[in-house]
Image (cartoon, rainbow, N blue to C red):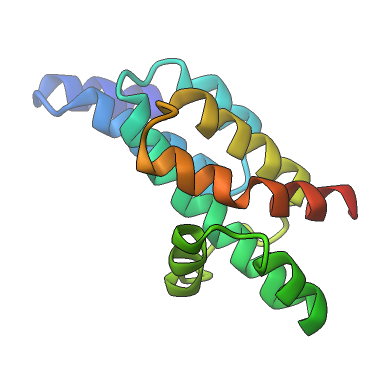
Length: 141
C-alpha cells in the first residue's frame, strides 16, 4: 500500500522526504515504533523530523502523567523539567492515536531524537530537559 502511495507521490513530483517524515510520525503516533525506526533511515531532513517527533514525546509524556493520577509524583517529575521543556509541556495537547505506549518506548524515541540533533540547538536542549524525567518514569514501569 505505501509503495503505491510513494510511487504516486513521485509521479506527481511531491516532496518525498516530507512524505517519509509524515509516515514516520504517523507510525510513532500509532505506536508502531519499530516500523517507524526502520523507515527513519530513508528520511534526509533528520532535524525537521526530530522536531516533529519531539511533539510526540511530549504528547506521550503528558498523557502518561495525566493518567497516572498521582499529583505529588507528577509535580516531582515536572520539577526536573527545564523551563523551556516545562513551557512546551504545559501547552501540549494529549492527542494520541495510541495511548498504550510505555515510557521505555518513549525513552528510546527520545534517545533517537537526541542522536539526530545538533547539541547546540534549542530542540536538543528541550529534549535533554525532559530526559531525566522520562528515564525515571521508564525505570518505574
